Image (cartoon, rainbow, N blue to C red; front, side):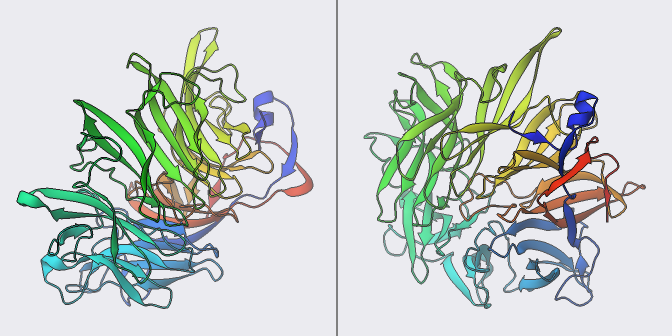
Length: 545
């Protein structure tokens, strides 16, 4: 195993191991519930309805964190703003102020832009509009200027004059989301009323200084499938995936959809190029679509991702030639090239040849083409087979390496790693992830994998102490209210940058059982090359202020 386990080898082997000395990760408090709210005298971070923080993302090269927070004002009212944590100074500043009543910002899903020194996109409400017409997709620039990319009652592109949006920033009534790429192109969903009063849905983009453009909508034919019709995508009320199209630096858009052909439903993963061409990267109706597995097809694209340069990756369920279920696999297409197979149920797990009965899936992709895969598998013991979930990293050069073996988890000798539900990759190929352990106590642990040295570094686990309280829940920077995670994001890392700065959203509990909430900026330092330490079990007794 290439991965060098820090401060655990001795505990596992019962002897002293010599490893590079590594300073512990440095935790810097960004915000916590109950503290004073920046820019609003007398207000505090409000936790009366649960976690007041949504998202904390290093969305520009400085590593500054942008996040949404709810404030309790002096008059008892509650309001939400977008704030920015300046890493260089350790201060939090207002970025987008809401106001009560007219002009209030409705929602901040999709704080994902930012490769332009603080430019971001969000869904909000416009001033001087009636209540039914306020919703808009906006772009905020670092100098404070704000631009409307699309709004309710605006003309729907590709539809007859007078057809206007009934909502923007969403593809279903229950979910808001917007996206932005490095050149300021914004993508979003929208709904409108079609012929005969039917509810219609589409995906759109707005370029800097331009008007909305259509990517796809449910009045258009299914690409290259004569006689096919769109059907609702897994019960969300629209034929398109719930997530807004991801974007690369060229403005090409990537999305998933579902259609019906000859009485059978299929799913496809599409690319819409900046010149308007629409093609399927993977189409479930293609019987020989799976590389290296003749006659096998894609029955479901479970997860998908792209990066800034146009590489794509996907996790999928595979069918046999007779249409029955075969297993899962992860695939990639580099910069517009053909789809290639990274790992399927039929392949050996890289670096773990003893694994059996495995099911890989995609969890993250970097801007340089690294792909992180989760893999559930079993190992055979004298008492029978035991399972867990591990992580494998596929590099752009085609090599692969195990990041985590479920039976060799740092700080948990004799225990097995279970589900990894959140992960992120930076451009160096470093990974950060949170794993739930297969043990009593519902223990979750956060780790960083450093690609250049192969080290797996423990960051934090539930049960540790922060601010004199016990950690009970943690999530990567996007937060528990951010379902995007690293899948679907197109503006770079969600929570983990190339300088190994990490953002964590943490729930704490005191001795009386009272919960509080905090956002931390965490720096994972490099090892002190040449120094040595005596290895000891990781995580033990870890306390931070």
